[in-house]
Image (tube, rainbow over all chains, first blue to last red; front, side, top):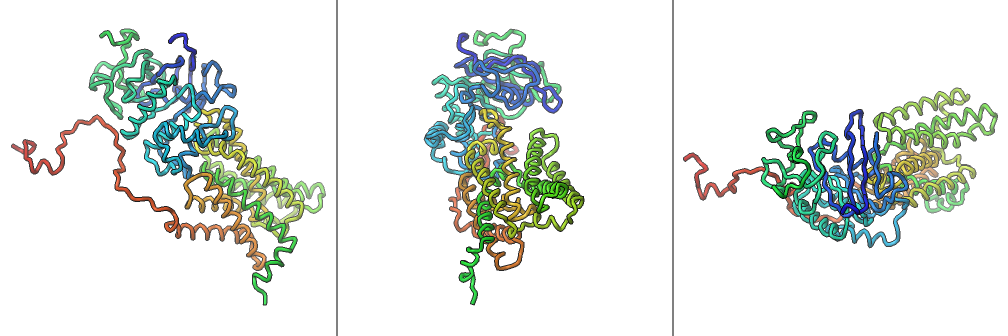
Length: 274
Length: 321
């Protein structure tokens, strides 16, 4: 694993937005073939970190290399697939699922759709189980289906690295299960994944490494932590911030705390032995 | 007896009307193409802002023309409008990208600054604000062969960018952050939309006038949106509507002494109303499935819920014992 090429190499990443320092010196490395989840409470900086990694948010200090190339026009953008958090308000302009997915074929020097875009679009929609809805307006799709369209838009370019931001937040159960099945298949085919999650949920079996953020810093990098003791198990679902467990490090600045208990004192060893 | 039919050949052979109709045709196709992107980016009023700035450009051109003794004294009005509109559009785009001032505030500043600057400059140039009327409300009868040539060239540029880069412009207009993360040159594309919008304003200026330019970009798109479900078709239908209202509205002014801009825009809005009323007739009615609008999302609340109705029949200890 450790000789696999480094697809994401972030060093000392600082991001300042609106005068406040959101990220304070993040180092992150993702190697080919890994499935890494980025965990943390709301407001811990997970979304900002992935948005900085894919070039949406400018860095105030530090550097990000993807595929061994610094962020910029020379990056092999076609190897990167990005799935943003779903915007719930649909744009006023009618557009079909196929049109939205096709826009994922552009970029990295390509301004026009390639030949055969239609077939590739259908193929990508098929991966998320929506091939029959290709010509429907996205406004007619459910929230979970809209999220799957965004995943298809990232997959249509056949990326080597997929970066997802809360792909299952607020998504209905069938869509969550379809998503987990799709991801399992793609990871088996060698896709590298960096995924922001509020909780491991249905993806727990896939995730082999977790990075936990608190207050814009990495506080854990290693085996996926289990949820705090107030919850039953690793696959337990929850969608709202909880009260911190006793003795846990509460988040004084945001008032929100995550429920993950990385073993900060015992080092970053996998917890399977205990 | 003169009927519309007997006068039609007369209208079509009138060289002045031929030029005017050709200009109207080009404007009718290209304005909705650009308007589709503006509506998608929620910048429907951008065309108005640019139009007001273009007025200052017209006056500036007039002032320069008067000072340098160019004949006729409005020969530099249109070049002045092109320059001012492009600069204004790029300025709006910069303000929008920086996000320092809210978009509508920036537009408001342009509206007032553009109008006031135009009236002020035209006064200094020795004209009256009456001289601006033909630019404000359109004056198709003054389309010279040179104007027409400029209209053709600019329309070709607008259509080349608007249609040729459709997929890329769709991507930035639909989801700018995703476009950035996919490696598209987002800033260049945004500036391209702004410049093309500015060119559209100056091209349409002669036909509908600066005050109504934006209507020609936006109203056909509003009509199309009522009946379409894809972006491509919205753009196509909008262009068809744009051509129809431009040509029909302009023909109307051949027999009636009214402003072409007003005729075209009133016709476009009437089309919108008719389509909105008739829409239920030809939009495919979706089968109404009784479905729960709440997504089936797992929560971690453990509630002692007894199925409603069940507690009454089976009894149990839930009631006071």
